Image (cartoon, rainbow, N blue to C red; front, top):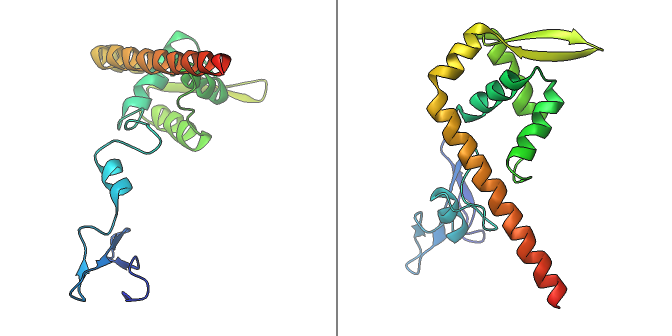
Length: 167
């Protein structure tokens, strides 16, 4: 339970997250202020360390993976590296995200898997190609956003590099 000696002690609500509280002057608990400014920035999409929101929203990575295997059949690791390159190193999807996505695409009939040199090679099916075309505006918007992220990262690196040279 909550403790006066530990004002940030959380209270579990039975649905996977905790609510935190701070003590008030009258001896009660303020549940609204308990998270602090960093929590509020995260909730508003500000992130920490200057990062603004998520790189991909729900379902976006699926479209990016489909586009990548539409260009050419790829191994999972190649997909990870291609996504990282597309966003200029701002994000690198983990194998724990990519491989379940590839399995889901296979289950949906959007991708096929073949063995090549002991590795799984993922390719687009006709059904996957049709799905990709149905979602072409979203794919193009994602490509533009990834290019913008990559450009922003490159600009930041250039600025930092020139600042270091001046000192």
